[in-house]
Length: 359
Ligand SMILES: *[C@@H]1O[C@H](CO)[C@@H](O)[C@H](O)[C@H]1NC(C)=O
Ligand SMILES: *[C@@H]1O[C@H](CO)[C@@H](O)[C@H](O)[C@H]1NC(C)=O
Image (cartoon, rainbow, N blue to C red):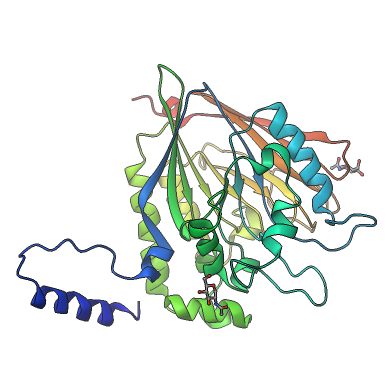
């Protein structure tokens, strides 16, 4: 971190000018606040289940005959129906929230006032989708432009687009008597996926420079941060991690990405949600690899998927993931929302980590 000498200087100055022996030193720069939150955001629900949708790579407005909002439109329509049917409590947004959709357009957002907040998000996702929070992380397309503005928007304009920092932790506690705790660790995988020297995109490179993300010490530090959060959340019945880049098969081989798998497996993560590959895909837990890996990156574009998956939809199929968690079980469905006549194309079940390892 390049700012460290400056920070140290400020702290020393502070110590010199105050007589108090034990000053409270808060995180002294806005930059480090931007990277990781020190608070854990806690939600308490009266319901005996937790219901949510996972969407990724959704902000592509272009194309689609007669579709004002491109291929996003049908997916948004079907998601609304599901969110209302199941009273979904929130959305896990795995990033690539804003794309360059046509020639004169730009990647990501320029600022908190960018019209894309309205045209690519607020105008598209209606009904219940416009009432519940979207717990977000940044994708590479968000990094191509002003990723700071997305945090700023969350903190100062509309916290329903929830991204108070690049990395943050939430806990959802639900159920009347038996309190079930679900821990959610939202991470920025761009740091683990793109090696600094190989970054081609100027916007991303500038953003990496601003944060001092130009060396693998930074990468290691963030890995330790994730590990620390996993240690602190070991009492949770469920632990989920959400990031932009997938950890399935051939897609999981880039730069530091395999280290994430090691961490998730050692600390008993229940599942990992990602997008980036514009497909719906799944890799089920195995005896030697108990983590479930989900890719939901087909909410506005489609592409090929990752070799090594257990299940996946072919290119050309749009959709999202729906899941319901109870104390002991999570059921999930991948939904084909290519047209408004939606269809469940894959269903599965996971067991709570509190059942793998009874207390
Ligand atoms: C990016 O957004 C931030 C926060 O909204 C703003 O302060 C900054 O000026 C923007 N940067 C550029 C290069 O536009
Ligand atoms: C998804 O739905 C579309 C439209 O009905 C259909 O063409 C496509 O084959 C379906 N995809 C899968 C994987 O079933």
